[in-house]
Image 1 (cartoon, rainbow, N blue to C red):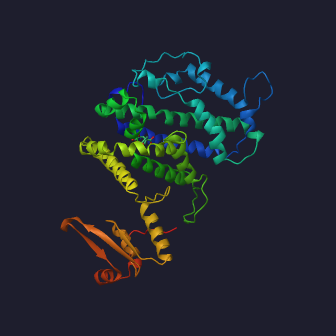
Image 2: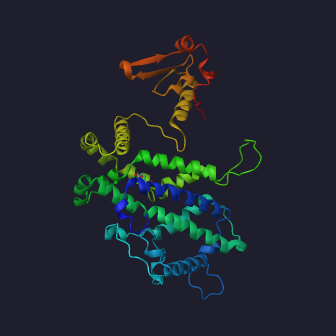
Length: 377
Ligand SMILES: O=C(O)C(=O)C[C@]1(C(=O)O)C=C[C@@H](O)C=C1
């Protein structure tokens, strides 16, 4: 969000920026994990000892101080890690029209981000060693990555602002009642989060691949583990620390307010996207409250998860019926597996057994190349 963009503030433009920021974070991560953790960098004061704090802190503080002189922290998107150490900008810049409420503007969670980064993230991604020949380069990578993460995480403030502006009447009573749970529920779109986690895992795979001039498609080990990137987003970027656990704790209040959400869903005609997201949330809510197990495996397509479950159930000697409108499941049909698909035009369900399939298509479902492959794992 550039300064003065207030008039164009929309969820779509914010999402575009979040998507672009994913690239920056993943590229910076790939750069940082070339090096080991380098724990000494964050702990010890290095000679000459007139440097206060660790070598990393020294470099970061000085970097921010210099960047503040050219106005970096006048941008509403930027939050400093060391706010006490900044200078006034020497460059006259147009003053931004504030987008956020002053209370939101003052929220700065960088202390927490730094703590999680050093104590939880680096151990997850990097090997445990010191490489003093690369201390300076490692610290420079840290600074780039931390600034990108901080920008992305603090962007949540703009997301909340725009969601509030789009549906003020829905938010207002909960704000007045200071009902944090209900506000979190309104702000959270699980379907979007799933998409984000899948997309960052895919980007990590693509950006981390070795590019050669050789056309062979042999699978090479990527530079970064896509699942870790998805986990980074899940645990710390989208939700903040232990966000998922927090959301699970909200469940009792989900139950209490189900009626209210039915009502809100009926009135949700603002945009098709938000209606779909709400429907998805509602369906999940209903299934969970009816004790219907919902299986989700991080970074795996639902149809692959279903195909794997089918295989496991057959191995235990049971037979399976898969109910889905997805025609690709037809390739699972066998003596032990039937598919039931809705036929909305005739307002009925259609059953496919192996006998029906072969009679209709005259081929073995497993060798039908018109169906996209579902994978078992
Ligand atoms: O895209 C949105 O709707 C957002 O609110 C952004 C975001 C995110 O950080 O990626 C945050 C919370 C939602 O649950 C889903 C996604």
